[in-house]
Image (cartoon, rainbow, N blue to C red; front, side, top):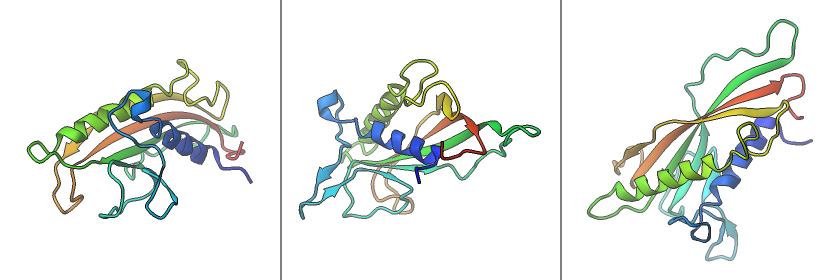
Length: 175
């Protein structure tokens, strides 16, 4: 069975964030890499909330925002719906000794740049086209940058909210 549309979208977001590499003109490298054991490892994770000392830096977590708005799933007997999917992109960086947040500001700017580049044109965001299911709009919020605090993170990090306006057919979530 194919992935549902929303999971395909999150995978597309992850793939777009992995384009953040020096070869593409960025400072950071979020591409997959080979770890010391010879395995392919990632720097961009979907749904991961706990990171430790063995996780790479920089690293990103793509998470659904738990503060979801109460959406309207269609009207009347129609399976068509326009809903918002809000995600959070959380980035973790190696601290600068004198200015711990500087790398977080750099990486959040690169994340925003990469996400904006996913607009193929005004209405073809992430290449899903113009008909349901598709992404009708992409809105990027203001990033929040935080120093290490040993409560949320032992390293500097940022959070940026991204809201997708989706056109969906609720009868065919796998389409």
